[in-house]
Length: 130
Image (cartoon, rainbow, N blue to C red; front, side, top):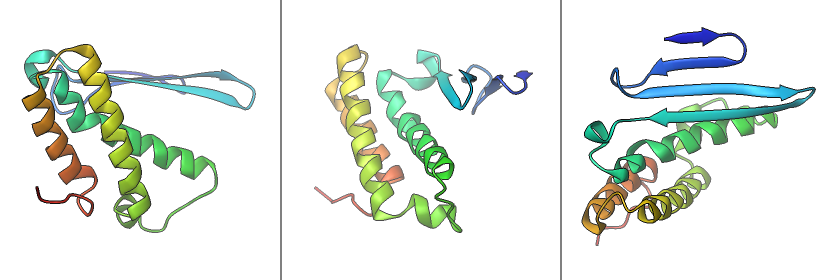
C-alpha cells in the first residue's frame, strides 16, 4: 500500500480493511517504532478481537528487541515456544484483557472466549484445562 523507506510502511494484514501502519522516527542512535494495527469492528467482532493479534505483535516486538540486544536465536519457532516467551505472552494477554475491559467494547463472555483462544495460540504449554 505505502512504502517510504526507511521511515514508513503501510500494508494490509489478513484482509483489505485490516491495516498495519509502521513508522520509524528518531535521531542519532535512538529510534522510535510506532506500530498501529487498525481493524474494523465488523472484522474483529468486538474489542476482544485485539486478543487474537495483540499478543502476537507484542511477541514480534520482543523478538526485535532481543535481536537488537544481540540475542540471535538459531530456531525462532523454538524460541517462540520457550517457557520464557510463553510466560511473556501470558503477561501480554493479561494486559490486552485489561485494555479491552477498560474500553468497554466487549462483554465478559466474549473476552473470556478470546482469552482462551489467545492462551491456546500464544502459551499452549501453559494452558491448563478447567
